[in-house]
Length: 241
Image (cartoon, rainbow, N blue to C red; front, side):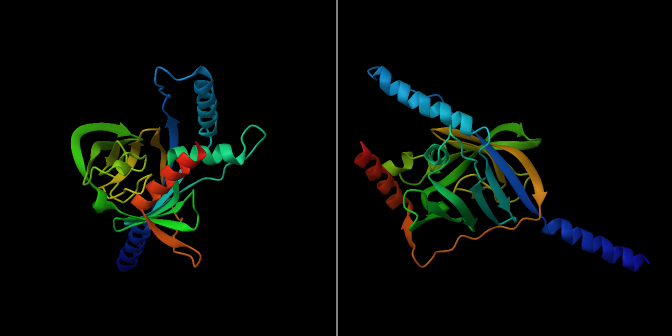
């Protein structure tokens, strides 16, 4: 009987350890700042866009599943309406991240490119930054978190893009890889992230039976680099101006 109970306990322990984690993130967009000479109609245009983003963000979520070493993050399905068209939802997602979904494994991230779906973006974390962990702490969803700031390995212009966070808050108590961005090489799950347009914060953390989806290169796709993607985004923006 004792042997049976011991085996049962071991099986339960293995099941518990095998469980994955699911984090649901929500978003908050920063107020817009304008140069003094900005015309009123331009401000009105962008303020209306921000208002839509704020409304869409009430139900838009980033859902992440981690199995410890790997994670997969993607947006939930967003219902369209007369008030919110496909383009409105897409622009809101781009404001959070221009590449999604994200698959992270061993400090390498693969992500789909919103602008050009024929390209798969590959980001090697330690090629671009290391993390400086500070002594600042705070509690997020009941977990003690530490603030970490990226230390860029290169000062090229593309590093000013929204891909690289201004800072993150991560919890060593949640000892698994998870981040709402392509940069997830931290000793604990990232529960909050701030970049120049939005704040992303965990709203729910739970165990799950869901598995990590793997993004693979399709026959009609080719790999692109972080730098090439930033250049494409900048050129696309200039073409529309």
